[in-house]
Length: 347
Image 1 (cartoon, one colour):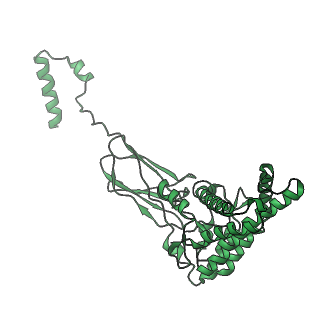
Image 2: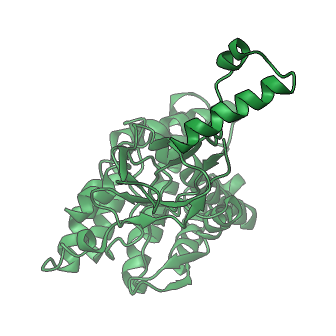
Image 3: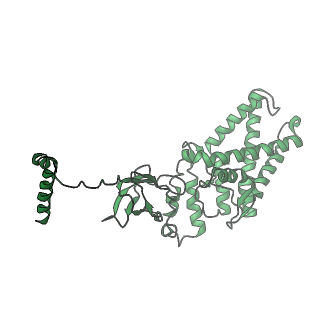
């Protein structure tokens, strides 16, 4: 009633002072407008694992003191998530959980009106509970299962890619497994086909100095196969067994491009021992040297000598470094079984 009386008195006063008419006053109700609501913001991000692969179906929860209840969504097939209509000016945070991975919680984020924030989500790591379910299996049993997976790794599903470990915690190989991997590569049908291509290239370039025709092609084929066979058996099985070193390339997959390049090109010279420690790669270097030296026993006399030895050694080492670079940046995406290896190892 007091408010109504005040309005009546104010209207009368305006009329007495020559203000707007009563009908005009009725057209302009004395109601104060509401303050404009700040424009809401958006929080988005992408959920990935330690290898940079998307994690679809992760549970993403937005929480904060201004929220009556937590908001929950799932990451899409590309690992992407987005919260719309986030109230600005109040802190909130995001919690991410996914099956088989450790959970992650963001720092508090306070949005400005209309702000679009893309969270930098840390790469989800495999949960400790998942990595410990293998307790009760011996290291040999675990390594055997891992090698079974590696023996199905093929580029485009065709070319053998057995000597790459995508699990950074892969169990050390036994002597039997080292020889098994070497034999698997040496006697794979695709290996024989690849040697044929190398021999054909040598035939076209007339190197080594074998005769032309099918006889020369056969000799070039034998030399090319002997180069690879001696290298992989000595550097991939015999010396790693004697020196207790792991002949595989351990895919890094994380870190800066510079660190990944350094890891790839240094692998011919630095390896992981069966004890898990980093050490000089005597096995690979020794295998390349031995293979280069043995080539002097079956190459034509006109090609033999120190030049053949050092050339074959440098070519072998250079090819290995180049192959490791390809492993680090290209081949994993087109290698069958690579993406599912970690999950299979932990089951």
